[in-house]
Length: 98
Image (cartoon, rainbow, N blue to C red; front, side, top):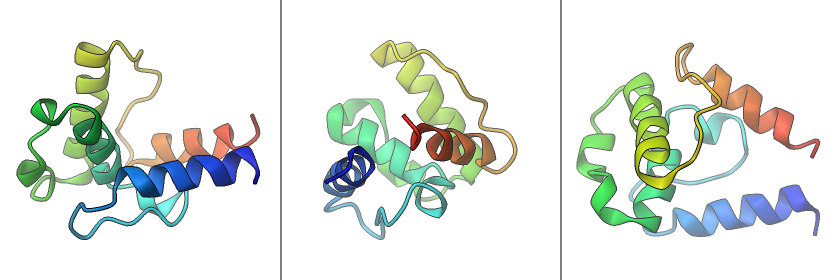
């Protein structure tokens, strides 16, 4: 199994049990920010209100996930959620080469 396949499998396992969420790839599956929030929620449920995630826009979801990851988990923000998730999309595509 390649590193990319392992990461995809890990992502799929992280969102098991989250209504309507599936991680099929590193492009369209991550664009709306819901999976990013679900991964954070799985790690620390008190940080993310998933009922809010289902109602927010993709930009709001990405902004929330990046902000919570940086503020509460110490993950440095390297991307900006503007542009309909394209920055996350580009990052995930870029990361496949490493």
